[in-house]
Image 1 (cartoon, helix red, strand yellow):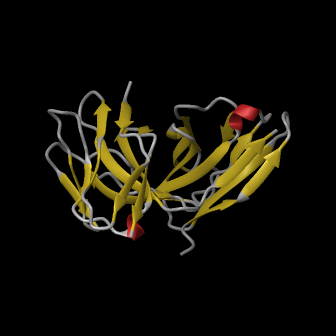
Image 2 (cartoon, each protein chain N blue to C red):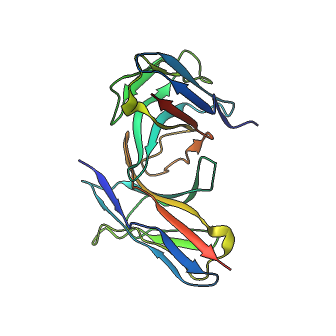
Length: 110
Length: 117
């Protein structure tokens, strides 16, 4: 079946550092891929998405490219801020099958 | 717009008790889903609905029932609570299917933290 494997955390970075959170998936065909973010005490919010191979999703300085050849959707940001501290979830959705990764907790220190 | 609302925020149940977690949305979304979030496991889909009167099972449906009599409401019923159902429950809604070419955004509620003793 479909699955998502996400880099385990927690990840601690200093402000302005480069961020990469790895995400790989297993699926047949071409699923849609998402990154969601969860701030403390809140529900998840969509950060970015890509619905076909080679698409790049971007939002708030975050980027991720849908790589079919490596079945990956890694999240990157060039310069993180304290306000980026949150839990990040990679997700795969194919028809009505929705799979989320375990989440990666990011803490950014000033 | 209130978005997606969930009640209660916290609940403690004894084993064997039943209860209903409420979820409502005011965005006229057709698609609604229930997830549970457990440490180290991310979110897992319990049940979902693609419109009023239509529901289907997700990855972990056992021990839960749902119904969708209106577009706005999608309650989740625990029939006989067990300690394994201790979790944080999230309801989500979207205008269209979350997968596919468009990939509609899912809007999540704030969650219900349930403890079963």
